[in-house]
Every structure is written in C-alpha cells, then in structure tokens.
Length: 451
Ligand code: ADP
Ligand code: MG
Image 1 (spheres, rainbow, N blue to C red):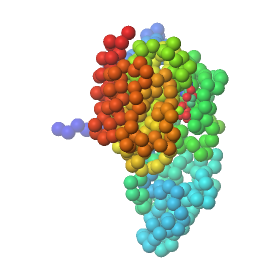
Image 2: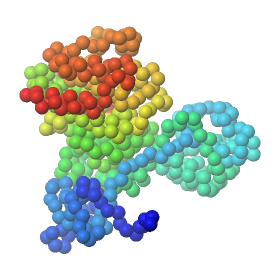
Image 3: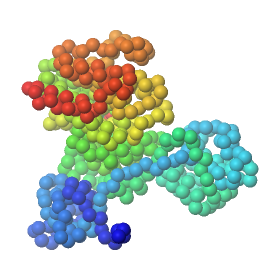
Image 4: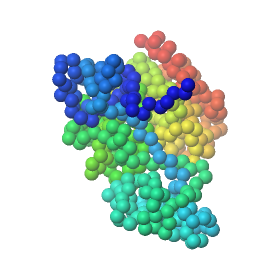
C-alpha cells in the first residue's frame, strides 16, 4: 500500500542537524539545556518523545531541548528568473515582444536609469513599459506596493494587474537564461538572520570587493563581519554569495554564521586569525613556513575542493588570496562570490587571467576541471611562498604563451610529486586533468609522510 504523506507529523531531525532557537528556553530541570533566541544547537540524538531532542550548544554543553522552540536551518535557494533579459534596449524588447499575445512580458535592466529596471508587457499589439524603481533596497512600480526583489514583483503582477494594463500572463523566456535572485526574506525563513545586538564590531581587517571586513565577536565567538558598502548596487551579488554559503558545511570551508539585516547587510563568518594565504606566505616566507605547513595547506584546500566537486559547485575564483588561515594553521576556502552550480557558461565577466583555465577564458566554460587548473596555480603560489604566477610575463601575453604550451617551472625546493600534480592540472584538455578526489588521495599520502 502506498504511504500517505503525514502532514501533521513533525519532521525528524537527524544527528548533526543544525537548528536555531526561535524563543528563549530557560529550562525547567537539570537535564534541560537552556538557550536563548538565536542560539545554534546541534542535534545529538532523538528521544522517544518527538518533541524532545538531546542537543549541544556552541560551548559544547549538552542537554534536552524542546523541538517546538527550535527551527531547522534551511539552505537559501535562488529563484530562477527566466524572464530577465539583462541590459537590452527598449527597441529590442519591443522587437522581442511584438506582435504576440497579451500579457507576454519580460524584465530588463534600464539603459537610461542605471540600477533601475523596466517591465515590458505586450498589450493590444503594443508594448507598454513600466519603470521599476529601486529605492531603499526595495522595488516598486507605483510607489504603493514594494517588493524585495524582481521575482516577488513579477509574482505579484502575475496574480493581479493591480494598475498595469494587464496581468502578467506569460514570461518571454530568455534563451539559456541563468539569472536568478534571492531575497532577504529567504534568509529570515531559513533561520540565518542574526541580531545586530549580539554582534560587537572591532577593527578593520580587510577590504573586499563589496565593502570593508571587520573583526568582531558574536556571542563570545570571534567572527569576521563583511559589510556591504553599496546595498543598492551589489545587494544581489552579496546575498548570492551568502546563499551559496548556507548550503555548504565542511571543516575547510569558511563557515557562514549568519547575516545581519538592517540599514546595511552584514555577512558574519568564522574568524580566520592569520588572514589570507597569499599575504601569510609572503610575510612569513621560507624562514617560518615549513614543508609540513605547505603540504598541510594544500591538503586542506584540496579537501574542501573535493567537497565542492562532490556537490557540483564550481568555485571559479580559486587562488591563494581567497584562502584564509586560522590560528590553528588550518586553511579554508572562502570567497564564493563567483561560485555557481554545474557546468557553467554564459554571463560574461572579468576573470583573474593568471588563475583561469584557457577554456574558461575563451569559451566561458567553468567546471570543476577549470577549478583544477586554478588549483595548480595555487599550488605554485604555495610552493613559491606567495609569488605572483608567471613572473616576468606581461599579463597580456600570458594566454598566448599558455595556449602555445608554455608552463611554469617548479618553484625552488618544490617536491617532484607536487610539481607533477601542477603539470596534470595544467593539461590543455580539461578531461585529461585529474579530479580533486584523485589529487586528494595523493596529497593525503604526502601529508602523512611529510614531517
Ligand atoms: P572580496 O572577496 O570581496 O575581495 P574577501 O572576502 O576576500 O573580500 O575579504 C577581503 C580580506 O578581508 C581578505 O583578504 C582577508 O584579509 C580579510 N578577511 C575576510 N574574511 C575574513 C575572515 N573570515 N577572517 C579573517 N580575515 C578575513
Ligand atoms: Mg577576496
């Protein structure tokens, strides 16, 4: 007999599931583990009672916790936006939409008002254009109804014309569209939003593409706080980076702790005391960094990359500058700003030429194999103590040399096994490059035998 879905039954949490507190729980017996709203609890065991679990808090204390006070942390997913056509001209949108049925629509980036969008709808053999104003991180057409993002705006006008010439009936799909959106509300419902008052912000420790990075504490834990400078412009890219991080958990990936949503958006991650790997290598050099450190770093990084490979996530910006090192000397991969799922193409952009595989530069083909190419460059960085790759070759000539078969020599003192991995990572044919799984096995062995 087929199983009926049991809608009233609470879902069962497995060992290791992270949950977040929705309310304060003072506890009533000494078996209980008291917690406060916003605390993170890791499930250890279930009990006979579906409403009670054994859990562990972030200080390692264990005890009984009531499920009804807690919520599972969910991955934040991107909404597809097949109707988004990017920056196309008004005339082109009219060409695309006419003469077609009423209610056919698309959304495009405004050419005249950078940062704003336009909704173009087909109606009575004409195309109507509505300006979408981006204001205080919200979107509106009529300055009455406001939306978090384009996806929500479109959803609203799909249900009801609400002042437009017609309800949105059918999206004009962009071929090969890869645009997607994420909203602040998705982070709230996923249990990722943390309260500003639990966060102490200290000194500036770095500068990122989207804004400054500060050292801080979150409930007595050392954290890094990345503040979004210009919310209007970079909001989506920033939130996408955070959304990728919500679905990732690995000891060698920089862990997202939560996001703060206020006047600005802040991304809170675990604190990595020794900063980024390239500066660490350069400032400590051969006198401090040992063979053992080098193999430990590369093995750590490969381990994280093998995890990403197993999840079909392509990082696209793997380089020593995007690796962070903590006080225990553990290296972790960060910077998921460009990360994408799957075998990725389209959506052009600027890429770090010296780290990017030839097929990725040429045809925008980013895969785990192009990440492997970058990993080879990263190995070279580690074993040359943070030198810039392809020394003495001007940036504009690098691609030409590489396509003609030029490859960097092994850095001074680099073990032959490591150089072999570099050379395999730099096979011109992506299929000939090893997987991270294969490389990890070699590095694990090397790590075990390096003292
Ligand atoms: P972007 O990717 O926008 O360039 P990053 O995330 O690389 O920004 O941050 C810029 C710099 O801030 C890093 O190179 C590093 O020095 C510092 N930083 C970032 N995150 C952390 C962290 N979790 N712990 C310690 N330092 C960090
Ligand atoms: Mg960076």
